[in-house]
Every structure is written in C-alpha cells, then in structure tokens.
Length: 122
Image 1: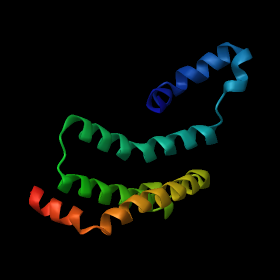
Image 2: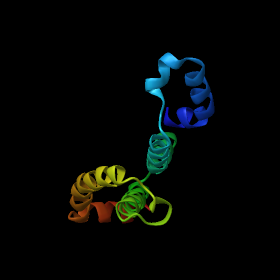
Image 3: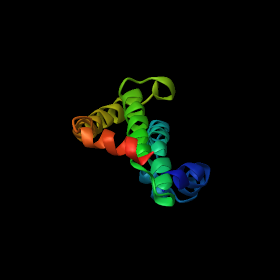
Image 4: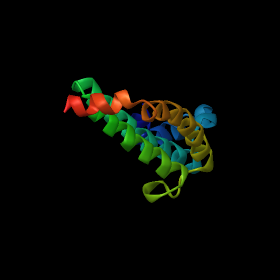
C-alpha cells in the first residue's frame, strides 16, 4: 500500500488540487519523506517474508535471515548507510522493535540446540 501511494504521489496531489475539499488529506513534503523512509525500512522485511513464503527455508537459512535483520535494525537505529537521513520518530520506533527482536534472538543464541540443528540441517 505504501508502495502504491508512493508511485501515485503526483496523481494524489493532482486529485487534491482538483478537489479542494480533500485538502486536509494532503501530505506535506516531510510526510512524503517519512513515508519513503518507512517504505525503505520495511523493504527487507517484505523481501524476507516473500522468500520464506516461496521456499522452505532451512534452520541454517533462518539463522542467516536473523543476522541480516539484526544488521538492518541496527543500521537504522544508528542511522548508518541509506538510513542516515531517517526521521527520528522512525528511528525511535525501530529501537523499540530492536528490543523485541533481541529478546527472541538472545533466546536462540542461548540455546545450543539451534546451533546443533543448523549444523545437522546443512
């Protein structure tokens, strides 16, 4: 849905110009930027969800996905790379998400069975 709104930005703005009663729905440039940041932030999650939905990932692959997602979340919270200009509200939301992510990830790290299964699953 965000992708569709982004792709139709000009059309949405034209529609609001043609129908002044919709002016309260007009997104400001800063809101469009925030929407773009959210789209960028969610893309890796969409990619991984699509991959998992289309394939039967092994335990080894799931571990790899966790590492990639952790890297993405940390990159956002530290405003690195493509995330340097991210809105502070998005960064703060991702920080809270990272806390939740770490709860599950630490559980995996604290159990040798995941490592044993990952090795046996190769």
